[in-house]
Length: 155
Image (cartoon, rainbow, N blue to C red; front, side, top):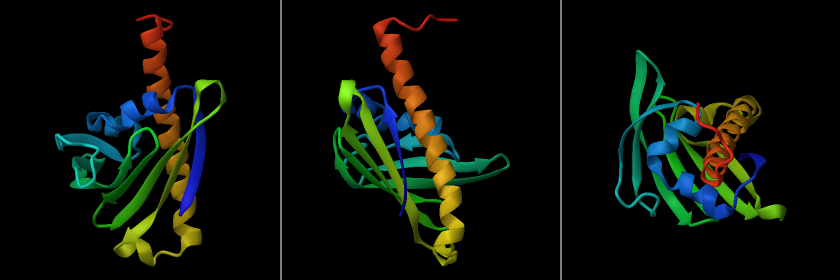
């Protein structure tokens, strides 16, 4: 698996709050374009996000399934994205100094045609994708925290 870590200036509980809101998924996951449905028990093990990936008009309806979930610490997903196959994505949250959280996102092809691509070819784009996803997640989480503190002025 390829991994990228980013420090987010928020507590693990505040980061988890965003991860646990499935409707926010396309705001931070690169490639996800819209949500169609979120299981009521998301992010419990076995729950699903029903989303779309791609750019219009080449949009594919797919889903992501929770494989493991430990609030404020770990979210492991089986992300489907046919025709490329599926990926395993692991989000790990670790408390850091000053009330921050180190978030590590790990990903690799799990099943399907994408698994046939050599790791040295498929992993650099995944690293870029994970870097951007964590940047978006940080902006979302830190923006919510700042807004709650009243430090962000509305437009």
